[in-house]
Amino acid sequence: MTAVSALVPRFSIARVRGIRPRVPVSVVVSFLVVAVVLGWSLAPTLFTSQNPALGVPADKLQAPGAAHPLGTDHLGRDLFARIVFGAQSSVTSALVAVAIGVIVGGVIGLLAGFLGSWIDVVLARFVDVLLAIPAFLLAVVIVSSLGFQTINAAIATGVSAVAVFARVMRAEVLRVRSAVFVEAARLQGGSRLHVLFRHVLPNASRSLVPLAVLQFGLSILVIAGLAFLGYGDPPPASDWGLLISAGKDYPRAPWLVLWPALVTVATVLSINRISRWLRRTS
Image 1 (cartoon, rainbow, N blue to C red):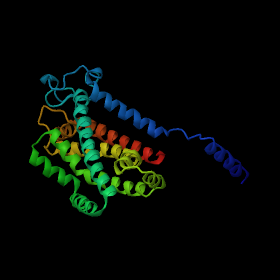
Image 2 (cartoon, rainbow, N blue to C red; image 1 turned 135 degrees about the vertical axis):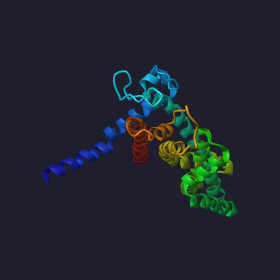
Image 3 (tube, helix red, strand yellow; image 1 turned 30 degrees about the vertical axis):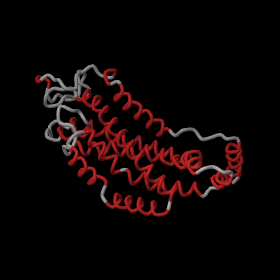
Image 4 (cartoon, rainbow, N blue to C red; image 1 turned 90 degrees about the vertical axis):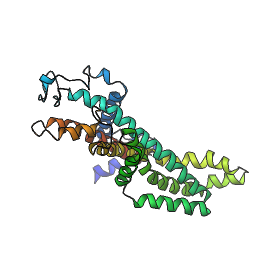
């Protein structure tokens, strides 16, 4: 009891002084993983000198070794180079999907929550319709209509995420709209646009940051799934989902599926961990 009681005032003093607990090790590792993947997408030539589209037929289906750290595929192409160059497509597509979800969903939620009345009813019913359709199924339908390309898969993923951002944004706008400082701004003669862009939008949009980070990881997973099913760019593209799809045809070369899958899973889990940490610290 003495040891526990001695720790309580120390913890309280630390909180009073504004001392925050240090960043968990898992979050630091997650940031490192995401930083490496972003580095692959921005400057892939700094990490490998191999050409991801050209291979040596004599080196096909080589196991991981000194010459090829992650092995080669059925055309003798270096698997590590294809994963590195495939990060650019995966990250860019996920960013496009998140941008569509944040912008379109944020505007819908902002208008529905701030204007209210029949506008809120109409937009809320539209969001309910989107939420009633499974996100992956909606993405498949949209990309089938637009064409089998990775950018179209990104657009489809972004459209499927609009409802989530709209619902969260609307809830935050309703909460902020009834705050004391918003009422004070109205009483001081502030116009609706002034109150909206100066007070409501900055405070309501804070909750979208952890959600956008979480959606970034989910978009990578959905786009990889679409590429696995053949809804992305055709070969010789090196999207992570396409690498897994091509590797499953060679069961005697398990590294063709193992390494792209591990990179995809590690990236998504790292982004999810960062999102949870941001949500707790915000």
